[in-house]
Length: 241
Image (cartoon, rainbow, N blue to C red; front, side):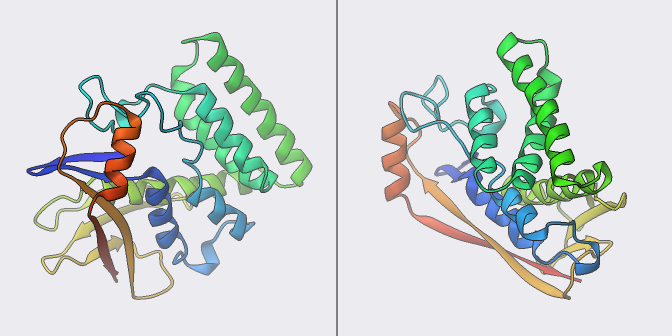
């Protein structure tokens, strides 16, 4: 979950919804610059955070009982394995993108425990095997994953409310084409991306935000039920060239 405190409680965005937001921007990427295996890459982008822990115990709560933001979650090898397994059921390219994302997230934690190291070693082997079987190149694969990561970064800026004030520019990340892209919010609240990488002059992207007034919860089912009953705000951003 992406969790942000407010004056009235908490705003919660599911990570799957963040993936859907990333997909909305990805679909507007200029056709001449799209990765190979376009439909599978989009699926990988929308589902790259799947496999989350079950709503039981206190998997989604801090020690104080507050909704737990994804940034303070401990790594979960079981969740990472599930994420790759779900992707593989669709296609090896989909699994390849998700596997590379798992490597990106967890390689900095290598040598923290044997189970994690074994998982990371398996991902290295998986990636080599799938590239060979798919008869693709490392360059094409890296371009596809860099595209996924760029869209992911853009979506995270939005859902974490990181847009700077006064039309100041913020770097999204380096795109798959090696170009640094920046985002800014104009006085009229529309968003500009520089340089403009999209196939149209204007489009909208939106995400659902759950508004919680309860500050703490006894367990995951308590939080889950509160989310089911919570008011939902549909937040929208307009991108304009």
